[in-house]
Image 1: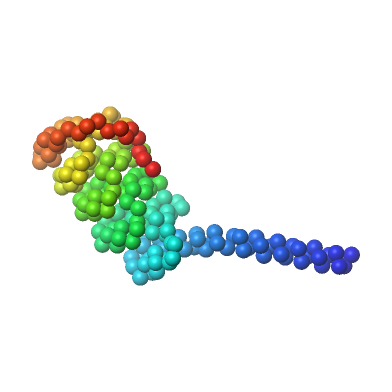
Image 2 (image 1 turned 30 degrees about the horizontal axis):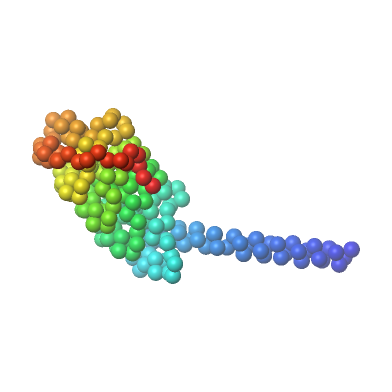
Length: 204
């Protein structure tokens, strides 16, 4: 009986070791993700680069488990062009959305962050990607009365007549309705029409 008890204990110990071994990679990955995003938030470029330079690492595109934010979205939301450029140069995906369904270029446009819009366009962001409400970066730029971003987006091929899902209005229509539109209203009124887009909703 004593030998049987020892055998059971040995088997139990082996099972626990195996369980810990299987859990370790997942725990380490979570830890690396958290530490990497913290380095981005703390503007610790050396630590962030150490994680990004690990062979096979995809941490540059890891997401915050609560907000869904990537490192690039963190940099955009704090209006930080140097960090945006740093992350894009190190493989950050320019079209990954946040937890609310906003693509990075829409996040940049919604606060009138024209330098951010320009960087996203240079980083190959899809110009007409929309959020879950069907709002494109151009619509957001019009809402923010940001003529600089609107012109950048139009020059990159943004569709001024693509409607959102909220009111069915386009960037051109929103601009025409704004009595204080000024230069932005003129830019939007003069924007050439584009061929109808086949894209109906947001893309992943």
